[in-house]
Length: 292
Image: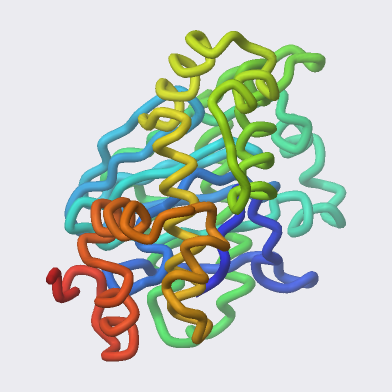
């Protein structure tokens, strides 16, 4: 399990082949997709169940076979509902930067002048071929086939005009969305301290009432509820990776009363911190956790 950050700075793939595939089920430590963003593109496809996804201020209910293409620096997160899903994260520019013949076609995507329509229907041929490639064990010429698959996927977007054209000077994100990212970065750096609603609103440059409305429309949580959820994620990381006492972890994550920490943790994770640590040691998945 990795400590969660809103800005995902992890290198996906290698410098020569910046593509990485993730298969996610209930036993995965990042099963619930907390809100984050990164500089790479992401292709997400649901295999089983339902996935409730938010992209900036738009919500999607994804079912088996449906996929979304997520543009760089898009704030996104979601809640899997008895779900199995897969993600392909790739650095578009890193893959194609040396392919001069392709630059005229792909430059508008590099510059965020063309933003693809996110939703891809179940059974989309290009998505199916591309994602199925990574479900196989070391298939022949995987890298070559993956690059060819990405070319076909974006060719389909271009030929079908399945994209939005933005002016060259238009930011990809709405101004308030950029402000919310700044708030999330503040939470990441100060979650162990006392954080007030007024402080977060001031960072966003909004009055508290409007800030709450904007934050809730994006994350589907109140600001202070989201602060607590972030603290719980950090606490879960410490419970799994350290031998610190529960009282120490509570204080380090901004909970000044152990009883309140236990209450908030149990509401978010379905069990107490003590049982959570025990379940991790037993190797249980989140769906199989003992709840007492």
